[in-house]
Image (cartoon, rainbow over the protein chains, first blue to last red):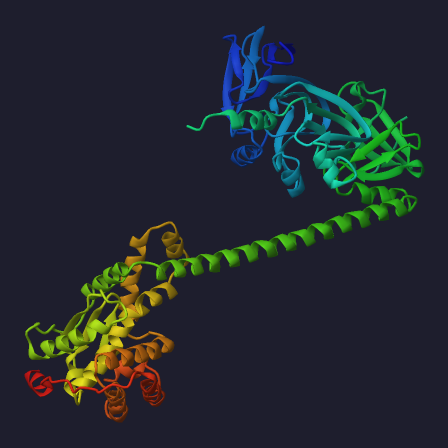
Length: 227
Length: 375
């Protein structure tokens, strides 16, 4: 299977070339176009994986949908075009074991070797990070495709790294994650416009997004006329 | 040469610059004083760290991942499995006991902190529920008191129509007329001027009378028969009318209010309250006004009697008479059974009477005898 990113990063779409028998699991509603030799199967569990209804419900908590779409090529040389709901970037992350913790709604697609589950990230992350309490946990080996509003950048963290809350897309589970103040004083943190930040510690890869949807909403919201 | 491995193997991972992407999942084992990691996937690579050179650290997204690093930090092997730390401790023969103990301490502290916050949250939730529950009830009770009297009337007439009682005497019956005349005389002095009092005389040997919310008053023929004077009947009626004007019925309803009805009222659904009120009125109003309400009705009744130029002493007399009769007719004492102690009651009325304006009382010019004979 090969993939190609089109129109990065503003309006990214993903194009997959699938050989006969290869399959990919995508977020519901992600398909834009496809060749006719692909079958679509909609279930609530990962391909060949366990779970079912409970996992589907758990996924809903994290902001993903209850169902997953599995695309399988029945003939050689099939192509599938998918895209995220929002304008923005997609990234490809190759997994060789381990776990990737992904922001709810950022998971776009993955190959069958990756198990998609939901992880509880604790109260503090929900209260202060501006993110959901539930995150998507992708584990196993295979190819993982993530999407987000704005462009996605990545960094190999080794030691400490700080990210503004709301900008995290995904991080490897070898990274420890705490909520803290941006500057030494709490008032200074808020006056500086940074407020609370996420402090990462450890070793691992971290994906973050250049823009956040809530800040666009905050800008547009007051200008919209009430119905 | 293949190395003998520990009985247990663990799923974890490894960081090293030579791995494509710098990281890979790995199967871990401990043997001959070394921690060994075989990367998963093809081609598999093997990394190892002598246990006595391991720098142990705890972290990861869960906070429970154990990291073993070489001194220069170029190689890291990590695992999140529960028994990994234990096996590490066992296999290192105590060489890693100190850092592992430190880790355990940290985990225990985390667990304690978690338990602490769990307890605090549970307590906060319970408090919130408690405050919410009683807050809703209190607000509903306050709201009920602010409801118009028309709600009382609705509850009263619903309860009245649903009640099972003896034959109702015709309005032209001498006993009905007698009671009606007394009510007419007392009515101008009621605390709620526009309350529509409706009196019904019911054939029943019990010495009983009761008031429903909104001014429905029921008098049993037994009470009329036993009365020694029209003033005594006036005393009982004044007492019952006071229950209506003091809105004791709706207070009773508010006391028996469940949380669901309370929420209904708060969202403006009075219909549910009326239905509940009618139900409460049927089942318990007859027997269970609170003692404080009874005393209140006594005093308000005495005030009404005084204002209507009827001697409140008649009310006290009636209680005295009931007290004397008590021994003979225990079952017929429905009216007084839940009422306050007669002596205190009589005392209270007499004390209250002294505070009322001194006026010349006029006897009721009504033919009690004729009414009694017609029964």
